[in-house]
Each structure stands twice: as structure tokens, then as C-alpha cells.
Image (cartoon, rainbow, N blue to C red; front, side):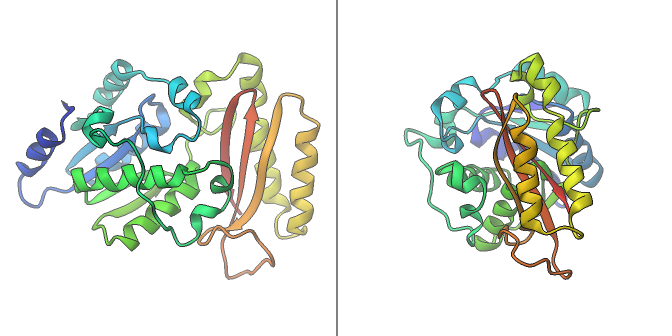
Length: 279
């Protein structure tokens, strides 16, 4: 496994690969867990070479304290990447990516950016678009792998690729969960014991929503979820929405020809957790 910190050096290495070599790419912000490793393992099966980036992107954090507190575990991350036979790691500094100008480009994502997370995290998706576009330009992968836990981000990246005609295939990967159902996230490590024990309630609620959907009115389901969380002293619901998968527009009438998904954001103490489920 080769590790690069400089854009020029990683590009030179990629350029030296034999013509026709397929490149799979998994962009991460480090603090790796089994969910990340599952993306890498899939990329290994589908490509000749797998590149993983580790970069905590400052422009996608709407709160400075979240950026400061984001776990940074580079030695552990590199050890995990070796264990799944990653080929190349790109771990640049902020100055390498942004030079002396750490700010986002402005994007339009077909309206996707105004839904859910966009209502609560100002500028977040401009930051995501900026770094993903930059990494795609550096690595030039054939396929890039993203987990469905950040489903809105996945759709935003699909929009980015379409609008900028970036020649990469976006591969969605199923949410990787703990044994008790909690969606794996780097943030989980920051949960208190008490909040960690409470957090699986999020996925349990989503599974009940899946059973209710189709036989109960969507607005009634939203109210039911809101009431369920009011009863829980440890978890605070930020939002729950049922939306179309393609547009992320909140459901109005259940159209059997369209796919829907339930989305949720919850505070467990100071830690913000998101999840979703296909309906």
C-alpha cells in the first residue's frame, strides 16, 4: 500500500498505471470503521486498483466545533486500509487541497440541496461538492463508492457528476449497521455509553415506519414518529421526512410508480446522527 500527501505525486503514480487499468475510488474523512471497509472491499472486487482518500474537509462543516472535534485517527486508519489490501491512499493537508483559500465553490444541485440536511446545515453541500469535484479531478476514477447512509449526499454527487459531465460511475452501497441496528458512523465513537444504548431506537422506529407506509397516511406517520421521540428523554428529533428518492421532495400523494425513502436526523446529546430507510 502506497501513501501520498501531495497531489502531484499521487497523480504521477496513477498516470504510471498500465493503460486500461480500472480505478475504484472511496473518498473518506478518516476515522474509518467497518462501513468504510465494506465500500473498499466492494471496490476491490470491481476494479484493478483502489484509491482511498483521507481528508477532513473544512468547507463542509457548518459549525467550527464539529470540525475541531471530528476524530482524527490516521495511524489506525492506515492499519485498517492495509488489512483490506487498499492499493493507494491519498491523505493531503488542507493547504494542499485549498492552497491559501479555504472556501467552497457555489453549486446548484437541481434543488436537492434545499431539502432536509440543506435546511439545517448552511453551506454544507457546497463544501461537499467542492471537495468531491476536486478529488475526482485529482484521482480520475472509473467508479466511486458512497454509502447510502448519507443518501442525500449520494444524490447530490450524482447531480454533480451529471451537471459537470464528470466521467465517473457512482456506485451506491447499502448502509452498514451495528448488530443492534445503529447505522455505522465515525460519530458513534463520540456517544456516551447512555446515548449509545439509546441510539438503536432510531433504526427500530424506521423499521416500524416501513411497515406503516402504504397502509397509513404519510402525515400521520410523521406525527407518530414525532410523538415517539417526545417520549424518549435521551434522543431529540431534529427532523423526520418521507420523500421521493429521486427528487428528495417531501411526499404529497403516494404514487406507486415512484420510490420513497424515510429520512431522519436525531441528536443523542451533542452528537447528531442521521439514518434512512427505503420504503
